[in-house]
Image 1: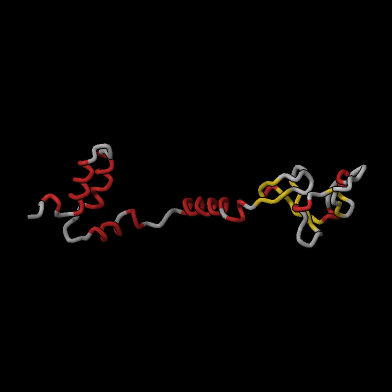
Image 2: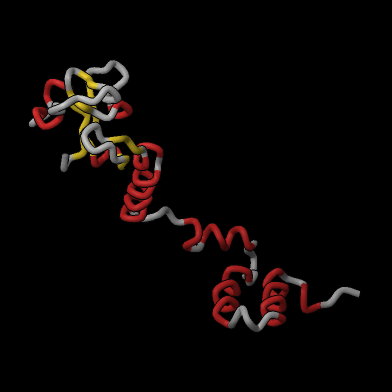
Length: 142
């Protein structure tokens, strides 16, 4: 014989919540209106009619877009600086032509070392140079 207290989903949920007092009364009060069957409607119809199925606000959508942009591949991409060899976020660097580097006389070594790999007579961190050898990533502060 079936237990008559479990004839609806709401009573099953409420019974489970009552068995676990650590969950607390606030969860019962949250779920009970959703799961209580109203006359002539199914639980699915109640969910569709509730705030559950409403579209998010424009502010929420904007926040989601900003989050995805900040945590996506482009937002987290890192590059090395050609001057200080520091690896940092791509948004903190500028890619510029080697000819357009400001104050590039500071990158010319006074006494070159045989281990230095000079690019157009400039001591630049090699991984920061672009694929064609014409551009370099430089940190805004450098």
